Length: 210
Image 1 (spheres, rainbow, N blue to C red):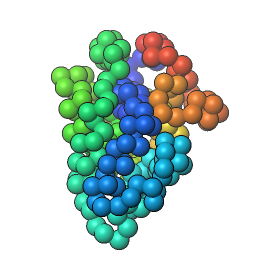
Image 2 (cartoon, helix red, strand yellow):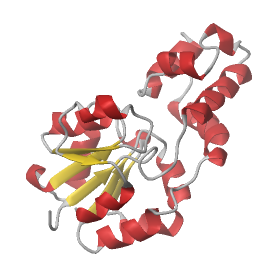
Image 3 (cartoon, helix red, strand yellow):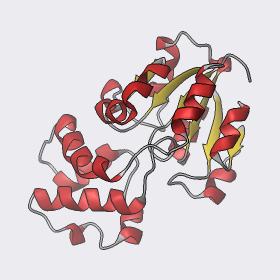
Image 4 (cartoon, rainbow, N blue to C red):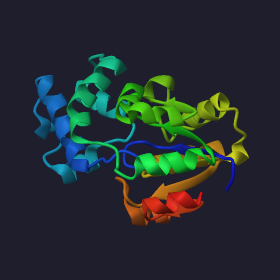
């Protein structure tokens, strides 16, 4: 695979993430608005059953008919979540190598500000970074993929979407581009393996083969 566009999901692929930290962040948001988290979930297992990767749905469940701007919800979430997570240690070297061969981009459902803050100077290796603010529909909708292709002037046949959740796979598939799934993220590997992605990455060093 030469001179292509690699679109990475961020959390779970380049930034370490855990269900425990997600659960705790949502628990603090719920408590901050004066509600009991137990009304929604009681532990990490029940949180995983409650949680929707399209966080707009989570926002609707928590706040009901009360309007809260996406910007405010993002601010509340990342204030509680970001301090507990960081880039995987292998990321800088891997991105440096891949950026010498391909165009790189990020398509994340997190706020763009959170992604760029975590990346720091590494943001410069990406041709385009798409956060939740740039799209009206989150993954698995292909809107973010199409935006990234447009902004990087990339044809469909020259792109691959790499993620750790089935919504990442579906966003790529719905856009008609190649897909890859990783084992080290939040998704269930057996379920991801069964999706039929074009690339299966069991360890980060396998990314270097792209």
